[in-house]
Length: 237
Image 1: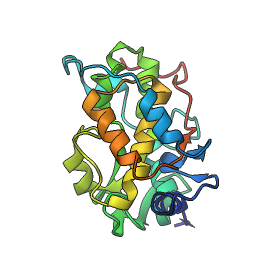
Image 2 (image 1 turned 90 degrees about the vertical axis):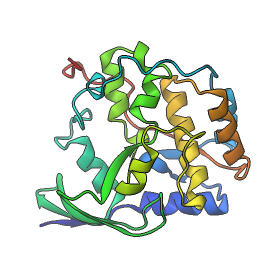
Image 3 (image 1 turned 180 degrees about the vertical axis):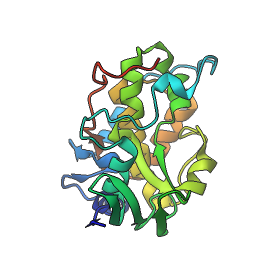
């Protein structure tokens, strides 16, 4: 088995959330946090506010097959995120299929969590849940954009499985990580994803976002990730 150390992005992101450090660094989802201080708050305030649309018609399959290799690196998206976010990564073969590693720490709880393939201690969370996106604009997208959204590293994070499942499809108004020092980074990442994909927020959601970000006025806004359209070979059929 080959080994790789990763996960530095999460440690630095936690440091930014706690200290308000202003130099360019790596944020949630492996994106670069850029722009002037307070960019996350400015972006949150600019998001479109509308009511939540019905969940009618939502199905996971509307966002394509899980963990598609949309970046064409011959590794599926789940393994890409595990490689990025875990420490002491071991592979079953080559440098794609992750066999084990450690979240050090898990951003949602602040505790170390061990990952072993085939067990459920670590999930890959969609920071903006697919169902939440469906009710706030994604039902109007073409399949290529939904596939891109579901596999965009900007919207993905390896986290403690139990805590992630307590989140379900909650937005900022209904769920925040129990690890309070991570909340600014978490909310900024949700703002970045919604801005990138043109999703709207409810009034309660934007109020919750600005409330969290008011406690970290210099919070940067993550950018980057994959294009908002999947390659033509992908289909959600």
